[in-house]
Every structure is written in structure tokens, then in C-alpha cells.
Length: 112
Image (tube, rainbow, N blue to C red; front, side):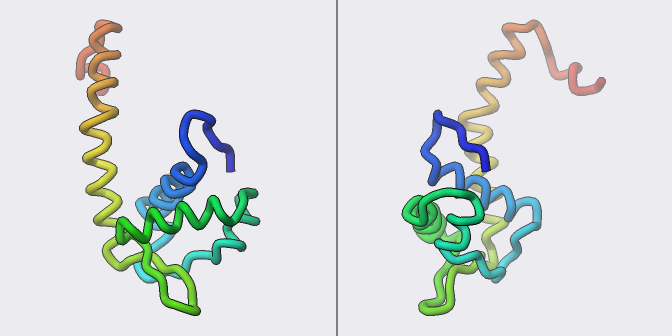
């Protein structure tokens, strides 16, 4: 996994896991690799992975079965979609609109 220096790695890992949920690669009640397994798979320290998992647990996107492991929450896709739509509309879309204005572009550019 390639990481961006502008954002903490644990957040990038959490984002990647959310992307996998949105794409359907991970579905509700799917088991997630253990912290050690996933850390080895993507080449990061297990402590970084645990921070990602803890974040997703706190957002109720993952749940933990003691002694068994981490799982995708049944309604995780709905929660991730709502959160990412809100973030896009609040943070990313205004930047895109501003850039389009600066470049003299309008919505007709999407019809090409």
C-alpha cells in the first residue's frame, strides 16, 4: 500500500478499508484480518493498524467479537456512504467548484 505523507497512515488505512466496503469487496459480517495479519499484508506496524481498527470501531463500521476477531458491521456500507458523501459535499466539492471557476469551466464540461 502506498501512503501519502500529508495524512496520518492510520487514517489512510481506515479510508482504504471504507473504500473496500463501498466497492462491495467487504460486506456486512465479513471477518477482517487480524491486526498482525493486516499489518504484515500492507507493510505497517500492527500498532498503526489497531489505531485504524479502533477508529472504525468507534464509528460502528467494525465490531469486535472477543476472542474471534473484527467484523464489518451489517450496516457499514450505509454509514460509510453517508459519512463520505457529507465529507465530499463539505470539503471537496467547494474546492472543485472554485477550481472550475478559476479555469472558466461550467457543468457542461461533464457532457463530453
